[in-house]
Image 1 (cartoon, chains in turn red, orange):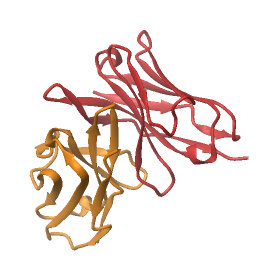
Image 2 (cartoon, each protein chain N blue to C red):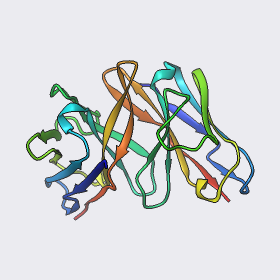
Image 3 (cartoon, each protein chain N blue to C red):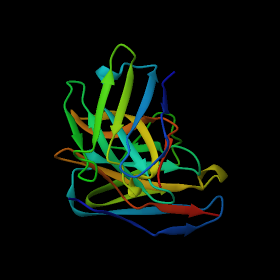
Image 4 (spheres, rainbow over the protein chains, first blue to last red):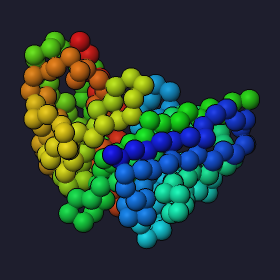
Length: 121
Length: 108
């Protein structure tokens, strides 16, 4: 059974840092591309970052140079290191597995339950 | 950056009725890169449709997707009580980036 379980969310002050984890079971993180998506309270979905099986990483402009996506293959776990946090980074953060369509990345077929990050003084 | 605009914002319907949700892209998108998700309160999104028209594993056949170019549609043929939720379209773009529409709420 595929399962993704996020952890690490919480309350942090503006300018602070936090590391989110996404523990995966049922498939191998390194063989898939993995993403983080966030959802501000009462708002829609926003893609945050992706890591491909080869290790390439990409970020939304809103988090570039502040967030870092990584993985631990031995733990089969995905991470999101967040620094210089701002009020508008407040959101539920979801990790998800990416799927391929005709050789191109396209959609997210398995999601975690999310972890809430609140940035506030 | 491609912007996805969903309409209507809210759809008020009764169980048994059909629903048609629209997703319009600001420029042409490959249908391979369009997906639809369902999200219920307090839950993660759930993949319904990928490649504009392929149903994800376990998705009932009352859900169908169609469209090409800039106009995509999610159709729910007969609403079941569990279908009342928010629906998002999503597209993949080069760079890479993924963008979502703002969502359509289907309410009773």
